[in-house]
Amino acid sequence: MKRYYFDIRDGDGLSVDEEGMTLPDLVATQEEAARSLVDIIRNTPRGKDSRAPLAIDVRDDNGPPCIASFHRVLPADAEAVRPPQLAASY
Image (tube, rainbow, N blue to C red):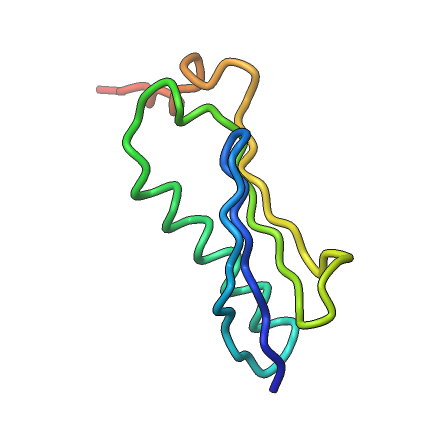
């Protein structure tokens, strides 16, 4: 098993993972990165910073280049996006 590091880019900030996580393969690593990104987004309070770019870059002991990069993508006007209305019929 290999050790992978999950560096978090949030806006202009960078949080470098110095501990890493031992995972069996690249698929498990990608799944962990995706889960981590969802958890970060879920636990981030809504506000003006919630529109800041957010990404998790995955690397191994060899460092760059990135093995995987996961980004939060927002529509141009996230506030205008609403679920479709259901029409009621009687």
